[in-house]
Length: 147
Image (cartoon, rainbow, N blue to C red; front, top):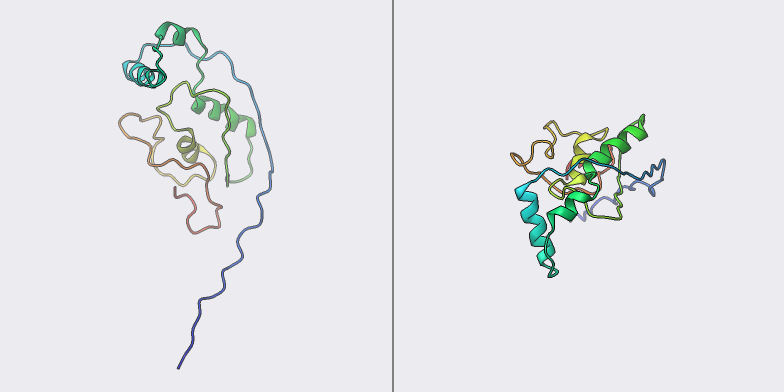
């Protein structure tokens, strides 16, 4: 008779270390150009609260999409010195263009990305984002680069 057991689990990576932070405030933005799809979405969202979407008010406010902010933050972080293992996204207001998923965009453009495809947000709506990955696994992990 033989008795077998699974190998003990390998020691995982240690606690995350914060190696660098960048914080910025963004202002300005691009002028609003009428977009029927976005207006339909915003009409639906404001309707949930018994409100009416007002394109004139929306056009008067500043709009800087989160993906534009992400590009500028990556520039501020340059050089990174290696792939990113984790990205935390925090914001105080809704995205100016909610059709773009910032986490997926960062998975595509951040150093260490293994995605051979073009950016899903740049190709929208022809190709939708494949996932919503808020964190990337360390490069040593067998699942690195997968969402």
